[in-house]
Length: 352
Image (tube, rainbow, N blue to C red):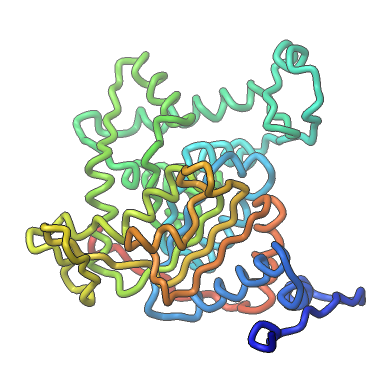
């Protein structure tokens, strides 16, 4: 019995004043997802203080409509992330807010037929005006029309150019902040967003935009040549998570000898009959509401990912089952209190 009873649960005392960091430190002495959330902050602090790691953030869903996008900007400004892989929604719907329009608190019980007639789009309990959405989409179409029609763009190239263009218009959205601070953004499902809608508008004006998904993938995997260890953060799952997870296991396919140049030796799997090299993530954090038993990637645990070579079984791995709109503000504020200083981010200018 004594082998199991190593650390007591400590009840949280209500005291004021108390910082977010202090509260989470106390939650680390409790149980369930409160303890997991506290562990998230601990691991984030570890990865930020580890000079050998490149930090990748997967940012899924439609969280920018809920007031989370400035937190992502803060992470970028302080270089607490080196590479961002979002959904297209998260790096377009924030532009509405950055342009000076608004989202509104609403109700998930509203009459949706009335909302439609009033020109309001519902994001669970948040409302947005369709007119604002269209203005943002037309703005992106205006940007697309400035591009070179003969060039095949990766999403990273497109978003970097878009970020500089928006920055020059004083629209300080996520892509603008990333361009300003040299953080590359890869959006593998970019067509499934207002960027795709904007491309259709540009097409109606006689301009054809080509985004090369394979070029995107090659650029992303080439970054492995500049990396020693990796740390990953997943807000939700979906395409952003899968894209980043593959960074650990398929980058070697870009090279004939199945070894990433300039990188430390990886792991080799026995009995496959082909040469494969794995570079599992040293740190991994996931904040999700998805469950593993349905077999989807969004709920896939890091323990399962170890079988693929995607996570280091000896690494710092933590999963917290929590709404991101609860976890992200708490974690970021605790991080600001604990770290407080800007990190020296990775420089990819020599390879991208």
